[in-house]
Image (cartoon, rainbow, N blue to C red; front, side, top):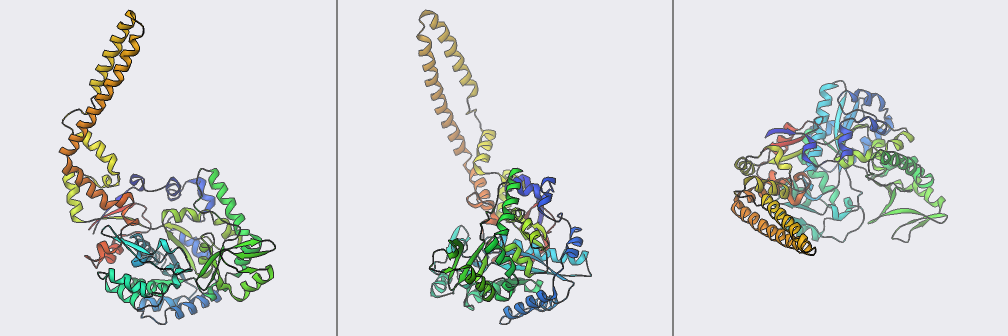
Length: 519
């Protein structure tokens, strides 16, 4: 792959909030702890005082989670190194999208792996483990039950409820797999050899990235949740996270930045047997929405003590939960993820948990040879692929037109003629001026109609070039959305099994540009 870099501002894909953050705008400094550079990790390492008992729990859980799958020497070594106080993690997270979902799932993981390598080169006395946080507790099945390839949507339909990581890969899934018989063995082996969706995702992520030492962490575990009991209680009974997040959100909005997430007074779901529903206050007690489950204050407090695994954090507390159970230094996320973390620093401060270095994942656009040839024929630069088709078409047709279909001069002549004659006629009879003005309007409408016909004729003459431009933009931004947020990795992986190795060679987690990769 040949790599080119385009300024993120030139892509039109990123919010002012995100761009101000990565550019280090001073007004945002109170909402995070570390600048976005390699030097910041020195302070992050010093700040992360991670208890050894937490390391023991993390090690024990990982050994259990990996006990039934084949792992690389790098994964085995990284699991064991968790017990070393000089070992730290760098983390990304994502939902359990089928067959990895959009390309940026892969981009997140590659960025995280390369950050761990870069940190090792800079701080050789420490060990750094890349982590993929597997969002098994998420319950929004409609967001993850499909992927897109070659313009087609492949979707698994299921009536199962609750945390998606626990979804059984039943007969309906086996029927779905028959539609994707073109999938590489890494996916077939994982899905067909697993009982649940969470198990399958762990297997294929491990198979694809295990040689790089990537660890897959599933937060849906009673031992992990036991470490989070103080936060669970503070949220349920005192609503402290709500107050802290609300304050930061208000301050950001006063600076002109819109909230990305919206905290609730209670930021936990109740998780049990195919159920993941919000917990809310109800009179003197609590209720689980869309169920008959009710608790008194004492019953809910006892439940936290005895079964903390039944409490699933929402987007407001998931970041804190991650930082409590991992010796983590950095989180890498997408543009919306990164900025919503800025609403949460007050929560971290409240519970005395260090706020990690907050980095964007790498952004990329892959261009294959047929698309590059089309660009060459049109004389396009790399920046040109970030325009929308209608804007480009309008400008291109105007530039290439053989006739002036805008007919600006003709409009001015006709307007002037009717105005002058109307003025002369009004001296004869005052009402004639209105008649001439009405005639001007009708004449200009005819000019507009002729102008539109001329433009359509020019578009027909330039149809080959316009179709070429549309093909390029359909490839780079399917249905108007960036390629990395729509297209599945198999679009390129099926013809290039070295795709991941190529990305590992191109990505730099501290380079904040759009990478355009010639494939």
